Length: 183
Image 1 (tube, rainbow, N blue to C red):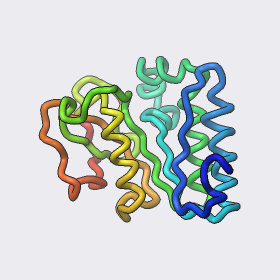
Image 2 (image 1 turned 90 degrees about the horizontal axis):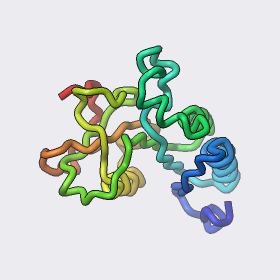
Image 3 (image 1 turned 30 degrees about the vertical axis):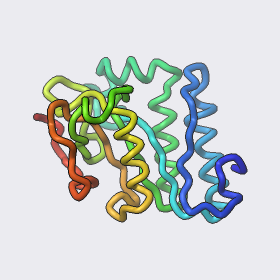
Image 4 (image 1 turned 60 degrees about the horizontal axis):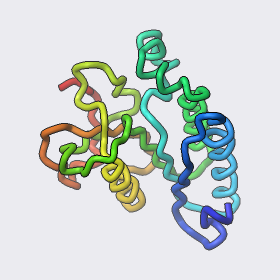
């Protein structure tokens, strides 16, 4: 946790880990649990976790967990299953938290993607007819920074996607969670 900054009295911890497609249990599950435990021990006030959509697909039924989106993404060592277990660990830690579940991220500039759509957990399934299927990494980063100070993001699990062709989403509309992903 020393490298995460908790020893310096930080109030917010946003862990950053790379994709380890060979062993997501080590990074996405056990690494996150270790950071949560250290954050609790050091008095960190808020934990912000970037997860992924479809982490809860198994609970959503066969259509979700048999979908190509889930199978293709979870093929990397059951990464979505590991992220789901990590999310539950965070929620039960006693820490204030924000869990951000973006759709697949891209390197496009936010202005090329459009607006940001904020949805309730388990809303996006990467199916045709949904509001979006990708989001700029920059937009995800902006949402994470905003989550640090925005009370609407506290103890929330939110899904994010870009809305192609839409104007940028005004900040006062962020964290207002949609419950329908269809266009």
